[in-house]
Length: 191
Length: 192
Image 1: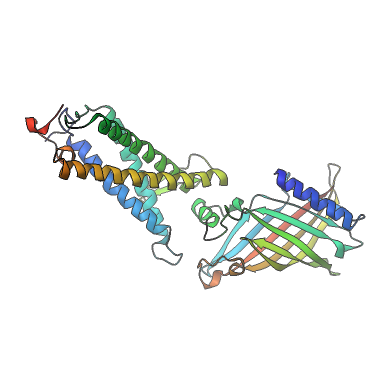
Image 2: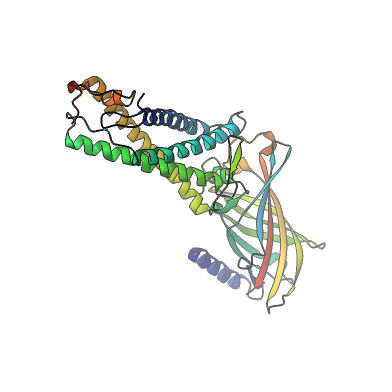
């Protein structure tokens, strides 16, 4: 936790230096109004869904200068949860996430381009299983405003698709299950 | 037929418990080694785990029965030919067997029930989960299950070599006592 906090601090400090006027947000982990979920085909017949329970991150966003927005998310791979003890154990092992060797996954944005319809394309580098690849996340703005407790919040959702083999995970789950959809539900509290 | 243990010999219950558990434990170790490398498309992928869980619980039940039985039984005396350090090593090894098996059974149970889902015992009934574990605790259980199993294998080798050594090299009744209940012993049996 300390490490994450220091990372976040340094990240938010760097945000501050990049853009002094942008609003900085911390993802609401305390109240857990955020989720990182995934979905992968099971044999081609149905969907298996799961999530990462432990993650943290922060972002900045300036509605007058959205292209300067930045986000960083750190996921503890250990926290993978598909509601099944033996599958989760297998996912933590070498065949998949190998959490002892690669305890963290990370997304660091490189660009953000907003469209007029409230959607945006967020590009960045995604590190999973020790491999970093550029990905593109389709983002949708959800809403923003004051909360009843004296804070200010903003929310987005993001969706992307990754190929497991790109991240060195080649365990054979069948031809229908080579790709995985990732969903990010992010609520930030202004800091 | 001698049912209970005596000063001379093991009874039929102890002998049966010993050998049934030996077969189940060796079988379960081999199944465990085999199943962790199965591919997702293997026909045994799901059923191997199911058998492993159910047989594991069976072993745990037998283990409990055996501990109660052992604590309430007369202990057969060591042979006169045993050296004191051999008796000490054998006793330590036997206690280790019990401790390791308890750890292996309990950690195995928690690996399967970590998410609060019970274990389907041979399709007869559900063995409920007693507590949920977080990822760190679940990983700890996995490691405990694996490490203690390998220690058990080392102990099993020692145990087997020792038994065969007594039988073929020293030519005493150590192994025979665990194969069949012995009637009153003859002087050549070298009982203390």
